[in-house]
Length: 162
Image (cartoon, rainbow, N blue to C red; front, side, top):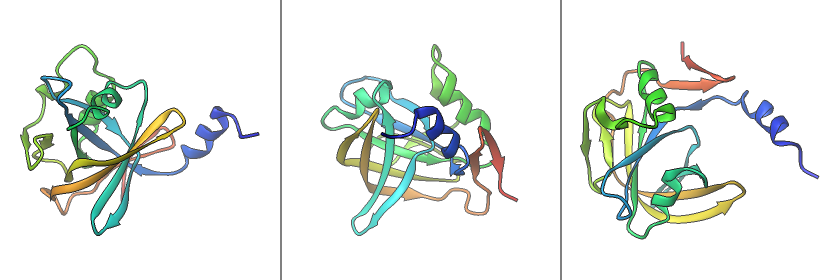
């Protein structure tokens, strides 16, 4: 029998992760959507693939399930905690009202001053418990702030690498 979700969360909070804002362009919506995500991993350099994990309850999940949906992963810098909070908690306002946004190859929103970004088409998807793992094929990328430290989430709080 597996451990409880509480035990699992208690252990996983000790694993540091980078913080991203995943933005989505989908034929299912006239407006872009985005959310804060800490589950990002490199999968393959050839072809260039990454993965993100999205909760089934999230609007993002519904949008990414639509044929033709695409997404960008905006890797946040240490000074972008407010952007992370905005996309994690803000519900009733336009999350994109703050920041300078553009698009790259797919049309998904890209944050101009992110530490780095990856613009992806959906390569494949896999249901996994309460989440879906989306594999993205990277169509474009950028590193606007290569010498800036990343925003890190560890032990239930933001951290800055020293």
